[in-house]
Amino acid sequence: MPPRKQTPPRAWQRMLSGRRLDLLDPSPMDIELEDIAHGLARVARWNGQTLGDHALSVAQHSLLVEQIASALRPDLSTRWRLAALLHDAPEYVVGDLISPFKAAIGLDYRELEGRLLRAVHIRFGLPGEIPKTITLLIKRADKMAAYLEATQLAGFSEPEARRFFTAPRGVPEHELVRVSNIEPLPATVAQSLFMARFEELIERQTG
Image (tube, rainbow, N blue to C red):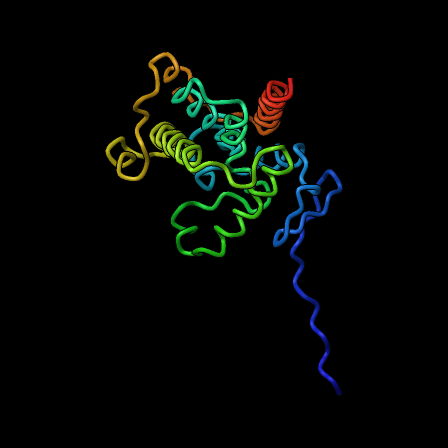
């Protein structure tokens, strides 16, 4: 009796929009803002190990990173502010793995994230690969956001946080006050704020 053919593992996810996103070969046409905002608002930063009645969502973190990047570079163009807002967009389907786990998994995971992010960029009118200077700026803002989250919500002391993240130097004082008081929001609120900021940036870019 010939061996039974094995069905290949499912590599796509059904979205609430009705789209079916192939995780290994994502098409920009299968990416919708509503799915991203819904997913990111329900993915917890720090594996949920944060203070407060609600998890700190990746959607709220993304808003914080865009605010910090814009504060570091007040002349930052709208398209790169949008890139900052979307920097963690792949996590709406792959989740937010903490850095030690990403390091353990290795390059395959980062390659998957990279494919998804390129598809997201193309879907919303950004280049698949953004300039290195902008990538570095977003990474810097991301580490500053992580420092603020770590010290305010995730139980890190300031010396410990400085070992792993970046203290928010270079951010104007008035902007630092604005971004420094982080209060985790309900998922529906974070989702609405993320979508509103996205739509504001898109309107600016096309207006």
